[in-house]
Length: 93
Image 1: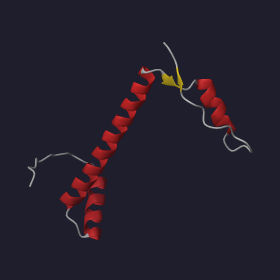
Image 2: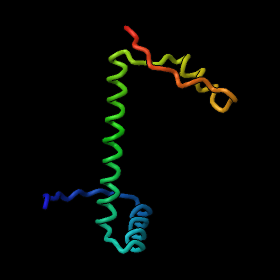
Image 3: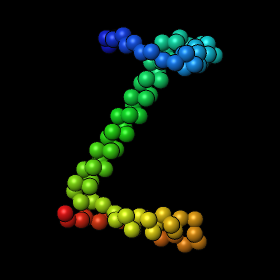
Image 4: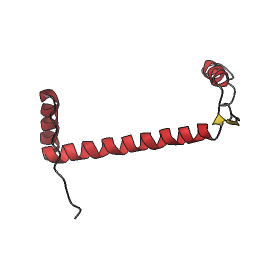
C-alpha cells in the first residue's frame, strides 16, 4: 500500500456541508469524497498543463494558424457552407 500524507485545508462552511451531504447520500466517508475530488482535480490540472505545454511547443516550432484565418473560420460556423478547419502552417520567425 502506498504511503499517505495528511493535508489540511480550511474550506467555507457551505462547501464542507455539501461534502458531508454527498458523503452521507453516497454512503462514503468525508475523507473518501475529498480524496476522490482532489484526485480528479489534480488529474484535470495536469492534463491542462500538458496541453498548454504542447501548444507552447507547437508555437515554438512555428506551427500556427493566423488570427485572420481562425477568425474567418469562426465567422463561417453555422452558415450553409463553412470552409474546412484552417490548416497549421509552419511559420518562420
